[in-house]
Length: 69
Picture 1 (spheres, rainbow, N blue to C red):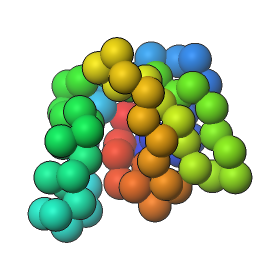
Picture 2 (picture 1 turned 90 degrees about the vertical axis):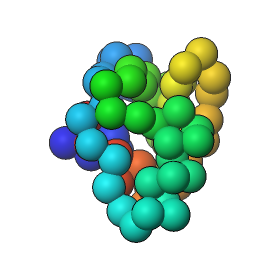
Picture 3 (picture 1 turned 120 degrees about the horizontal axis):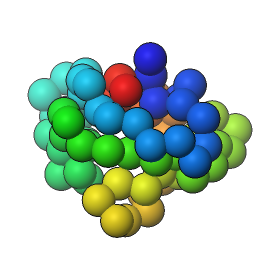
């Protein structure tokens, strides 16, 4: 399922990072790598705030839809 459908507070393992090469590279630089854990902190009008590698990151709905957990 895409990251946008994950429930807040739930730890999820990243299964796949989709999108074009530039998008995948950008997300990997933020810490979104296959096998990593991500926790949704909150969702505000579709945009998502997550904990990844002990950092908080805000990503758009479009980016979050490319991350499958």
